[in-house]
Length: 88
Image (cartoon, rainbow, N blue to C red):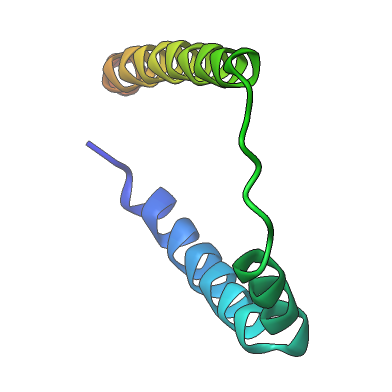
């Protein structure tokens, strides 16, 4: 179960982040960046480049899976710690 206090902290953080991302997107800098991306030449990578990218993505997936396991473990341990403190 997620602590409502933690959620209350994240709500304004996400709102402010979204607001500033939107402001950057509609600014001249954001429009210039979008234009640059729109007209960027496509790079045809070699087999080595693609293999390197695939390996990088696989490594990132392994790291994300490990982090997910850590979060699951932490979520299981938090109620135990809270219950232990409540009994003391």
